[in-house]
Image (cartoon, rainbow, N blue to C red; front, side, top):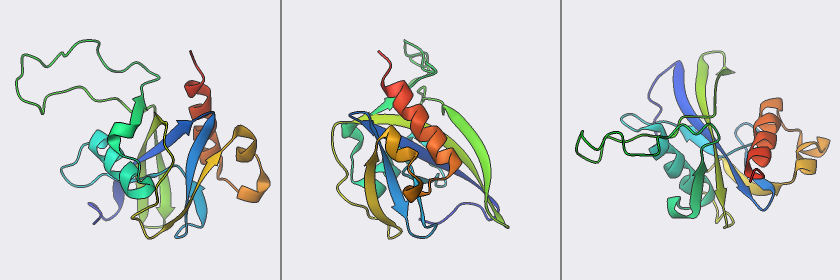
Length: 165
């Protein structure tokens, strides 16, 4: 899909956990492993982007994912019940937000989310995603994967919060 801005773009990035492993995708454009994710499109909210990007890059559907809310950002009740309509709702806030430069003229504001699933990836509709791998904590530290520091940080955080009772 088309990007919405020329210099600064908003993205989501997710770390999906299954059986004490975290799913990473290999992106051949950047020659690196990342959590699946992508750009928030015009008129799209971050939560909608999460599920669209997860299905595009992993084949895992919204009904097969559970969004984790480690900060307990959602109210226990529908605080918009008096507003009417389906568009008024609370959405999970990102656990982390960062800004990073992708190229000299291109910067991302990235919202980081965490999910769990019981299914395996079924492939990708994204031409740059060439591999999926479930990483153990030990794999994350293995030099052969040459993981970026932020990917290791978020992946280890995902494993930590998924193991909480």
